[in-house]
Every structure is written in structure tokens, then in C-alpha cells.
Length: 202
Image (cartoon, rainbow, N blue to C red; front, side, top):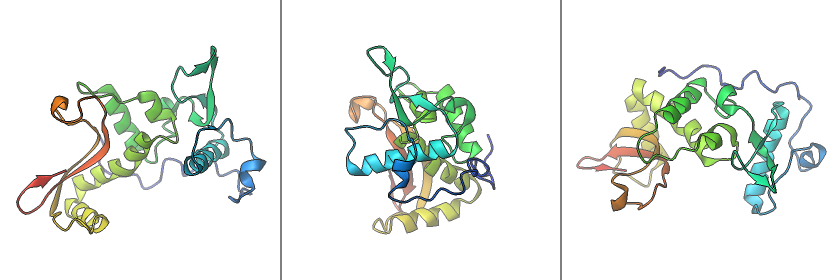
């Protein structure tokens, strides 16, 4: 698996044909974004519309959601923030290396891991692919420049002065044995394991 981040983002050549599009308060009314969720709070509603807009601008087909088999009386339910065939296109990931890593994680699930592949590859609003997009590049950078990652994490968390060295970064983490921690199969989206000058902490 490659460790070097691509110089070009995965979407650098996608969706640039809509050059006349300007994001303002009226744009959501001008474009068919697909079905939205009536139960969203204001923040989530705006985020869903933004992701739906990204899907439309990039010419991606709307997908079924929030789950692969979601339906209403046998009719598949669709949301504007869901794409189709993301497990093939990789469009839910910023870097191709992160897409490859996501596929590897799905194919090599550990015991008790509950990675939802459909959500990971097709839900543009999900925290799971967001965590992969944010933290996997850090994982790759740590393999090449660990001291830089140490500095970045210390700078990102100035209220934790005990951070000395980043020992590991991971995704979809379930502490084991789960009976001693979460008592279920819920996972942390991401974790950073660091060492202070006397102990290791997550």
C-alpha cells in the first residue's frame, strides 16, 4: 500500500464544468438537490444540502439511503447526499490512497469490527468517510515524517501539553475486550495514540 499522498486530489478534474455556480442563499432553490431529511436540525440540513450540491455539480447519480436496502413500502428511498457505486468510483474520498485503504479495511475486517461499507463508500454526509479523509493522510504522513506529525498534533491540541510523541493513528477503533469498555460494537471514528514523557494515552 502506498504511503505517499498524491499531489493531485482525487476530484481535481471532476465537476469543473459548472463554472457559473456561485454558493449563495438562493443556489439551493435553483438546483434540484434530491430528497432531503425533514428531521435534520439546521446545521445538518445545511450540511446535507452542501453534500447534495457537490453530488449534482459532479454529475453523480443519486443513491438509496441512508442504508443500502432503505425503502418505504417497498419503494427505495433516496437522499441527495447519497451516491451510487462509490465502492467502484472512490468519489467519497479525497485521495486515491485513502480509497484504496478504505477498500483494504473493508476486506480485512477484524473480529467485532462493524465497518458499514455502503455508508463508507456512498454516504457523502457520514462521519465515517470524513474520518478516513482526515486521518488517513496523517497516517501516511507519519510513515514518512513522524516528527512533523508530532508537531502537528501538539499544535492542534494545545490544551494537552503532555503530548510528546504520536505512536499511532487509527480508524474505526473498537477497544478490546469490548466487555471492559463499550459493552457493544460501537467504534471510535478515529483515534490518536500518543506518548507523554511517562505514559501512553489515547
